[in-house]
Amino acid sequence: MRFFLRKEDRLLKRADFLALSQAGRRVYGGLFLALAASNRVGRPRLGITVSRKVGGAVQRNRIKRLVREYFRLNRQRLKLSGDINIIARSGAAGLSNHELRQAIEALFEKVAKPIGG
Image (cartoon, rainbow, N blue to C red; front, side, top):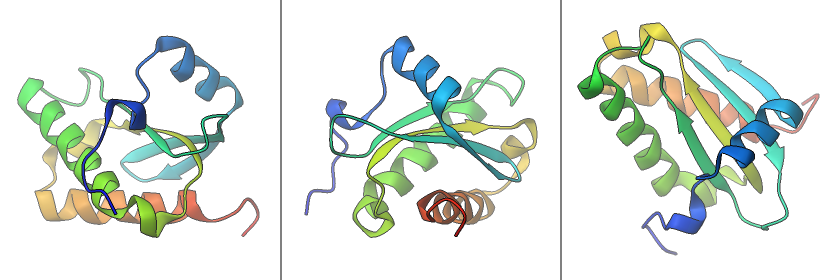
């Protein structure tokens, strides 16, 4: 089991984000929105979008760091096999790290469920 997040495990290209926004399944989770779709790579990849509406650079980077860390530590347990883009909403910056982790965990559990399940 590897615990590091490689470059191949992340969504980096704009085309990947656009394809995910057009064809991906939307999962709402309070302060986060997830877009998920299968991919041809055969492993889960993570993308994170946090706009300036969420907060300043420090808050945005903290949210991204927590999402990456949760994905890194729990990706084997989540049973995800496609691309996922986590989009933070404006109220996320005001939460503590513990509250953010709980919201992220609830969102990933919703995403891991099959459609209609």
